[in-house]
Image (cartoon, rainbow, N blue to C red):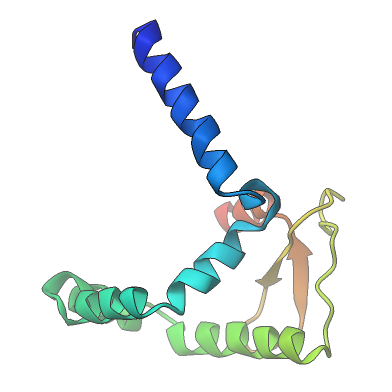
Amino acid sequence: MNDDVKARRAAYARQWRKLHPGYDTRDRSDYSREYNQTESAKEAQKRYRQSEKGRRAVKRWLASPNVREKYRAREKIANEIRRGRIVRPKTCEACGRRGQTEAHHRDYSRPLEVRWLCVRCHRKEHEL
């Protein structure tokens, strides 16, 4: 990429950041949540689910083992967090890294027994 293109991209990025203050300070999941509530997102999701590719994805998801049990376990922990009965810790139980943690279920039949792991440790846990 030549220097002229790099300079134009950098200028565009600076201008965009001025027009969107606070974008980098918010959690990306906030943007996803806000976007998913818009009518255009709901329409796009509906079109995808009705497409052949979307129908195949749903069939593949439903055919995977223990999918209902996994779904219920995830919903159960999410509901408990939302209701304030469980507080999501800010540190990973495996490595101690501070930041966003994810609930890892060792046994989906016990939905509230979870380990709170960072993304990296959660990925490693599933690779085992």
